[in-house]
Image (cartoon, rainbow, N blue to C red; front, side, top):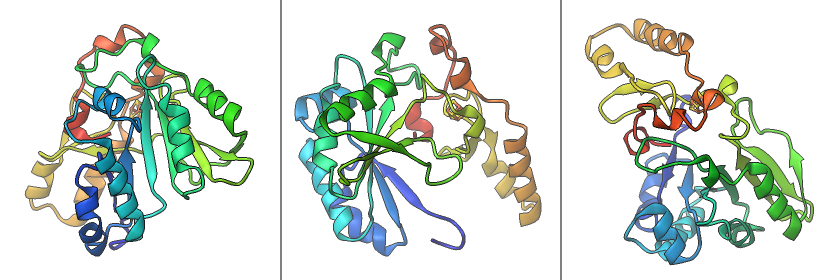
Length: 245
Ligand code: SF4
């Protein structure tokens, strides 16, 4: 914690093996690592990256070693591409204390060519894991937690599923996002953001800044996932790479 801020980092893990210690020393407490498969071919196909999955696994180990744990592993599941990774990833991280969170494939931005048929519903993901290692649901760790938690009945830890398409949770969403150019976005699917940089540079007293940011959040009308349909995929949206997941 820095002040009353809980600073965590979501990363593709490419540099984590080298940077974990420096990040921990700088005050970071936890990391979430995106990892959609354990085999290189599927990993690269899902992520369009040119680094090997082994580097990400080494990064996860390095992060755990310096105490950035327990680690959350985020895996997006896409029909026909990495369904096999559901059981692979569950097996790899069972018993490690880390939690894999399987995320339904979403229509973020425009570049991923999303179709509803690409979505593997969270209920099916849970069924596939349960068939290998029986699981049961457990309570959310905190209000507004987006992942449904399931723990292994044999005590080997837990997994999560994020049913952002089949069971939208916009009502409880607390995720504001800040772009690198200082815009505050109220939703992953927003078409525009509030220019926070201009507010910060406007020399307002802290209290006024707080109130202005709170007002932006209070007046938000975003609930994209609750309205999602095949047609909304074509609406203008910000790209995920611009504001983070
Ligand atoms: S669609 Fe927007 S409001 Fe709904 S859960 Fe996702 S980020 Fe939150």
